[in-house]
Image 1 (spheres, one colour):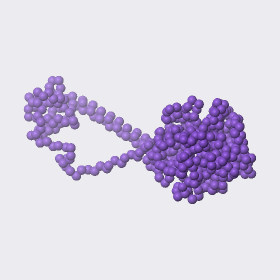
Image 2: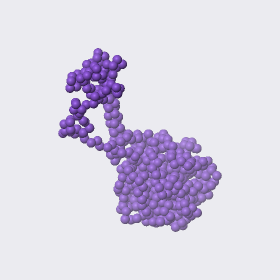
Image 3: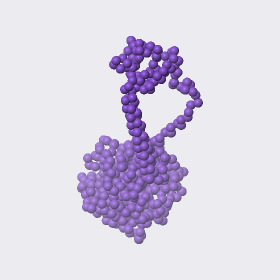
Length: 513
């Protein structure tokens, strides 16, 4: 998982020197011209017996050919200091052929240039229509037609029983429809095979934020992906499950919760983020809210959402991220099993793990097909980094960001994780803040995340853990083994980048038409 602007051509000025002074041109006096001898059998020659007084200038502009009878054929009149060479009668016929051929060549060149100009103007026009603000000014090719410039991005993935990895990337097209692209990464191969899926007919606010999650559980071990989106400041969701009919089901998150609130209204420009079974958004009060959903045995939504005010005041329109604080799904689904990252009103960043005691035990609910309940787990067992993000750093207002967590490879027994936050700073790319092995936050700037579009979003995903696969075995969150993927827009196209623990690698462009 790159384009450059066309180089400027130097301007052309007429030379102040005479022809004799121009470099690369040599004027030879007549008495120094070479004489062609017939015994050397040159390709071009004139027998001395027929023209003893002439010395012929041989050049590429006017080639001269000797016929079979020894007579010279002059294909165009050539003047010398001693007169004009005789022209044979066939010259006139050849003249018309030459004139006709030249006219054809000129016509072809004119047509080719005209077509090239038209296509170039069309490409620029399409790019301008897709990105009215002009992007970063380096676009040299036609932009994709089915993704909105600056579209919200969200991605999820899971490892299939045969070891292959399936991923889904969600985005919005210029007409406002939600679209999906699906990829398969075969085992022991980092490159992905992508296909664009049909648009989803949803009632969506144009420019909505998107948040995807994935649930893999049960005897069939079939993934259910979900996309959350805004419709007139309400949160709606669409669940995709090929093993169920209908395979797409819509649910109203904002209208399906208790706790005495009649409606969950999103704030101005509010973001969305999700990690099953949680959804995070910014309420119109400015605080960060969390909603937790229930599922039926076939993973279909129940229409019931439990909502809680986390009481975190955030910058209006702040980007939001949610990360698991454990590699074990049982602990992730319990209170304190996730962390929230948001931008504070002073434009700094905050990383918070909701206090277990704030979650009402009356909200305990069984996970589908398991005996697991919401339970109180000591918070210190789940934290992997200092919750205090470095306070001296501030970022652009409502700057895009994404976050993910991976299992600590050195401490799997404790189910601890490392946390990474990808944030767009004041430059043209994304930087990475990370806390590994329970350390403080550190920063790096991978080259693979540079040269992003000014309005680009960022999405990162890991492979989903599960309380139980088809054999009933728990599937843990994986370490950073190269399966982490991040996506952002560069010159209107979506770039795919992988993370393998210490290196970030650009894999290429997702082929969105």
